[in-house]
Image 1 (tube, helix red, strand yellow):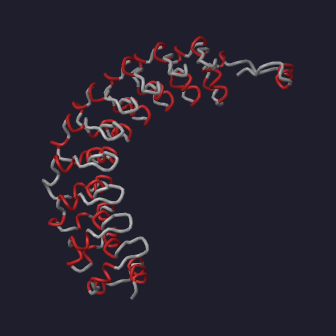
Image 2 (cartoon, rainbow, N blue to C red):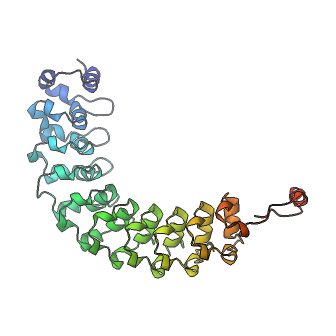
Image 3 (cartoon, one colour):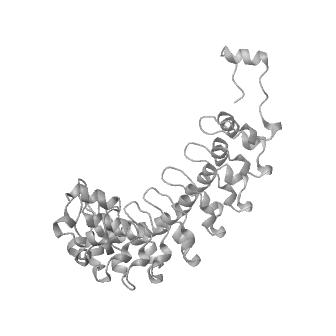
Length: 341
């Protein structure tokens, strides 16, 4: 049976266990057009135990396909590291890199199978190995929600504060992906959450942008922190207004002063909420005519922004612009008058 037929039969699950056990080394290591061997396919499918015992050795499990991925990468990516003999799961083998710099260990973190590694294997040295993007194992675990699979001693303020090449700490990545809740509450301190990326974003920015401000301790959702600017002038309060999460901010902090904070374009959080349809998250006592007529640097008001975006229904009826009459509509068509928004 040639390589193409063998691989196709494997995919169709028409190869018996006896047939698999009788395959030669050449058949096991024959490559398809992507450079994958039959061992790659078996690792991804969780069928390594159906191959000859010799096929679950480094000689077979570390063969790279055209992208530099090994069967070990495939086993990690599909959650089947538990089919790999513990003796093969050594530091050098777990640090085998694809051509894009991704290791088997990082792949395991990405797919949530760190718990399949032998106990005691995850040392600090191993965990701090970086991908080409500068992510260590903690960064990957934060992104994929498996921080709870790491040994507790790795979840220290020192290690969590290490930044990748973009300046993101574990806290930033956890906030962006909604996984801050996997970190012990005492670690969510002001120092940790106010650390800045290369772009000047704090962890509060990340949580606001992703809609996870609810995972930030309420004591840190103060005006002082909510108006911190990134290098582009973006603040967490603007992000919360834009993504519709002003309701996660303590009501006592949601003041007129906070809602009229300007970014570099002169836009306030009211402008952002109006444009995205989130004015219904503004306390009624703050949605006054004066607030709705605050202008940005190009003269646009929140009322105008709401009208252009089709969200006038969120404006109290008495504050909405009057519907043009027949004469005014005619003047607007002729360019002799302006529309109400």
